[in-house]
Length: 139
Image (cartoon, rainbow, N blue to C red; front, side, top):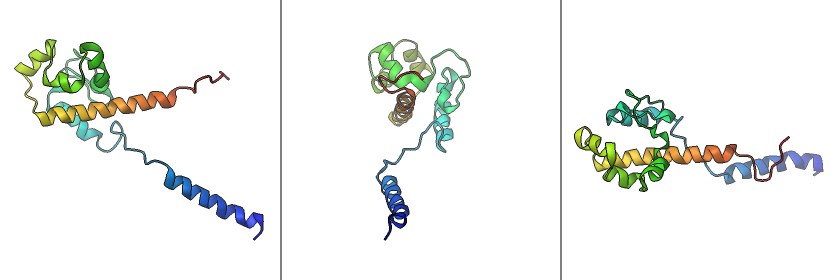
């Protein structure tokens, strides 16, 4: 076999190996087919009365509260507890809203945490991918 005959089959073998070895990308919830279902969760539970979830295309009816796209990390910064703890025992205005208007089950809270945690991971990955390598020179 000559080298010119060998190269195309070698390239195909390398491509096949790389394809198989590459980690499978998880579907992004912000743009995937499940986005409407996740958006509907926040509307159904009443979150969208005050909060937007811009990553899912949810607009707030009354724009009086923070966008929940960033809530997974924002709650820690604002209140010093993780989102799971905050939803179980909210403080401030959220305590009043949860007592007076919202009756979230544990399953509802788990669903909210799952979606917001996933959005947080997606946003962090987007920022990591967009950042230039450390020490990169400007062109």
